[in-house]
Length: 316
Length: 302
Image (cartoon, helix red, strand yellow):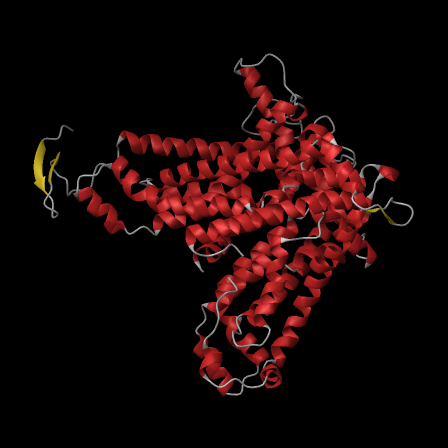
């Protein structure tokens, strides 16, 4: 995005740097607060990465240990579980959300009643504005095995189960509900981008297709799908680049009985640092974080390359 | 409803078999449209039922046992408890002031940064842009950030969760995309008339971007109101919790306030959820276009 270069400077003779900078002094002044914030909150932490090569217990001073943290890391089964979970959770929910969002957008697009379409859109965007804490609270109440748990009570009444199931405390069920909750919250919001694409298709193309005898299915197959294809790839690329950031959605749905099995890298770092008392080692958890950042960076670069190939521009 | 098939010759010269009345609008009551409508009734119900369940339980004094559509014993005691209990009012107040302060600060930083980034001829502009963009692809990570925040005294300090999220490069880039669509000639003529860069910022850039300010401001406001991660990481003092933190504690039932006026614990939990979502649920129907616009400035514009 930063690649737009003005030709203005080339046309007229270039003045000395000092003079050109003086012309913009007001702008430099305006940029100082922005630079200060970025320096403190984004760049200062990058200098802390060196602690990945230290051992630093909660009490005491950092001690150089070289690559020992990384050796420890790759031997820990908890780490590999967390790494695998990060990838699996993100990819599965990305595919589920995107797939369903495409289907819902296509159906919305076919809707005859404009009023009902508008109402449906308003409703399906709604959960996106609820925080993850609220989402988790709502679902932990309705999934509760107690008598106030809506899902269990409904399933019992329908005769599908005999006894209430504690869904969020069971490793297998936790994953299923994690995906369902993500779909519930995010799929509607994801349709916005597809709807924007669909409404930008020239209605003349559909008319021409009708005249040529294409039915609803054929119009979808030959007009809508090709137009959507690029958008779908873009959405997948953009989101794939961010999959290592997974934290809050998992964190707020976890409880002690499923913690170990459902950790992702960020939650693992959190518990290792803040919930393990005096044995916490900032060096070790910084090392995990560095590993995460590097994988994230690699994914970003790959996705950026893919994005340039597919749509002719990068993602940052 | 039986249609007689006739042959048509399309403008492209194709011979097509089709029902009579091809040019008339087709009947709306086809099975497809019926099923399609039904699908959305189901989708909307799936989304609304959990929220409805929480709403009625928050108004029900006998706890929400079982499956029902309306409260069995209606009462506002759950909400009365929230608004009379300091341990719940304080987090609510923290949420309000961090949201207001953070939104203004976030907007100030995003607009100033964005305004500088559209000065194409400015020396070091590309460097500045790259400094910002690099933070989108690489970060120090959770623990180094925590150590910096602790070092500069922003842990257990309400300024921490206000200042940290205020610099949001993604929103800044959205703002820049919007500023870019303002005709350059406006800035040039302002410059000729002796308007300073600051003057042009306040008199041209901001007034012409009201819609973008609204949608990016809303994105900030939602993020601040819903913030949990930053509070969880940087705040341990219970007196500084925001409402999301308090709600989370209550759901994990470690920290329930005294029950008043016949409300059960469950009533209060549900009432808290409703209070946490209420501000944006009330605003949302009126501001939907601004909420949606944020995504589209990012997606459609280059």
